[in-house]
Length: 112
Image: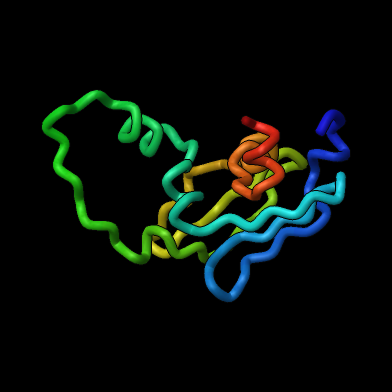
């Protein structure tokens, strides 16, 4: 994907199962599961939690609400703001990041 028109979604839907569907301007289609999206939340708090070195980190049980996508709202013309079932809403997901997170066969092959 090379130009900004191709990188902009034509359609964004929250599906019944809580996943996110995006039809991109270049014809590509992506579906993202809630757990994978939440794990990739780009907000400062989530990023710090993922990246902080802590060998004694206790793994907390996952609250099912935390991976339940409630809504996806456009932020300007560059991102989506996702709201999760546990109330978390500070992650702004730029379209470029969402496209990088696409885990379809074609995207995995392209990434190598």
